[in-house]
Every structure is written in C-alpha cells, then in structure tokens.
Length: 370
Image (cartoon, rainbow, N blue to C red):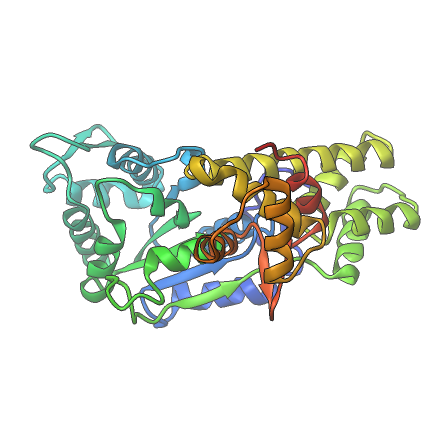
C-alpha cells in the first residue's frame, strides 16, 4: 500500500523510485566497488529503498540501524556493538548457520543456540576487523557476498573511543566478499565521517557508488496521492490534494502520512496532524544536533531563525542574528556555525544563498527556544 506508515519492503509498494532502486541493485549484483552511499534528506524514502533492495538480494544481509540511538549526544562502543549484534541475529535462517560457524572463531563472540553475543569491553573486547574478516571468509566459502548496511551512518561521527571508518577502510581494501551500504540524511556529516575532503582520513580517495533521493516535484506529489487514494477506493477533492502538496513540499514521508490519516479523517484534520507531527520531529532532530553544542546553542538558534525568516546572505544573516542576540559573532565562528548547519542538513546553500530546505522546517525552526 502506498500509504502504509511503515517503511516499504516490497518493490510494488515503492512509488516512482525505479531508477534509484535499479542503481542500488546494480551495486549489489555487480562489480561497482565495495561501498555505496544512499543519500537523501529525512522522509525521502531511504530506508524503504534499502529494505526493498536488500529483500531482493540473494545473499546474507546485516542492517545496523543507527536511528535507534541518534538521540544520544555521544555513541559508545557498547551502543554500536549492540546494534551490530542485533543485525547479525536478524540474518535469515538460510544463511545463519554458516555465519554462526564462522563467528565461533572470533574472540569476543559468544554463541548460544542461534544467538550471537558481542563483547564490547574487557579482555575479550571484539575487534571489528576480526569480525569482518570472519564474515568475509564465511561469505567466500558459501560462494556469495554479504551486505552490511548502516542506516543513518553519519551518527557514527559522535562515536567516542572507537573508529568505524578505520575498519571500513580495512574491509574496503582487503575483504572482497563484503559490500557496505551507508545511508545518510545529513549528507555533509556523512561526508565528514568518511573523510571525503580529508587526505588524512582512512577512507579518503576510495571510490563510492552514490544513489541520491530527492523530494517529489509537484506533478509527482499529485500523482502519488491520487494513486494512493485510488488504491483504497477513496474519492478526494482535487483542491484538497493540491493544498496537501503545497503544504507538504513534495516530501514522500509526509505525503504518505497525510494519505494514511485521510482514510479516517477530514482533509483539514489529516493535514494539520501531519504538520504538527512533522514540526515535532524536525524540532527533535534539531535538538539532537544542538545538545552537543550547548555553549553556542543561542547562536545556532538565532542563525537558524534568521535563515527561516528569509535572510539568505552571509552578511544579512549575521547582522540579524547579532541584533537578536545583542552581541557580535566573530566571523570565523559564524562561518563555522553555518558550515555545521549545512553539514547537518538543517540549512542548505545554493550558490551564495543560504536557505531552509522546506516550509515545514522553516515553521519548526521559528519555535526553537535558546
């Protein structure tokens, strides 16, 4: 169902993502390198596309869902290994026995029945490279590739006391039976994690297959809603569809939620509920970003509000924020704040203009409190 609220797992439930699905499938079945980046802002359908592509892949897959701990200001090795452990335990039964047999030889792995447990500390602390070595060996022995997907991988930039990028670089160079998919909604932060512009980073210079998702345009948005309602045999006034499209900015996740709510509610009720939900989630995501920057919180918020209010030049945004704060912001610090906001996907830069990606984000930012 197009309007189903959970991420899709079947090709027929995706709307107008054939091109992107084929690009990701090409990576999985072909010789396009060991690492792919699946990029797009929140609620553009990355998780759905990932789930569908993995469901159609003929080998074992492991998904590490970083969304489960994204509210944390820092991420420990224990946090990460627990998610990795969960992903390994979710491998389909047809592949699990071979994987478990291989992992029995890894220090820090304990097997109980068909459950795998990973040690995150002490003398038996598991080394990621050892684990990846044995997963690679297992896949090679059974004549397949194993896919490790890290959803919202940019969250790993908050890791303390461990480096996943070093293990990924080792696997990229040495392990030919493992493929990685890193998804990211905060594209700038994901690029920082993999060191795309940092010659000293372990993954610098490695070719990566990129698949990008964007918002629906107006025609796509209207067609998506019309097809979703037709699928449910619900008749909806075109004026209502056009208002929903205008208010929700072509964001697939919000359009889908509107359609789902509209099944039992009036147009106004469904639209207002989506807008309230969207604003609450956007504020929550902004707060997760801000909690790691408490000393500069007020500056970040006033700069966000200035951009959301329509100030779009470097100088005018700065002047507006300083006027509200009642204090100057040194140019170096101000530029760093702008770059961090762009990297986090909270604002965007188009040519020499700074903008908020959509109307829902603009409205949400105006409600942030310093």
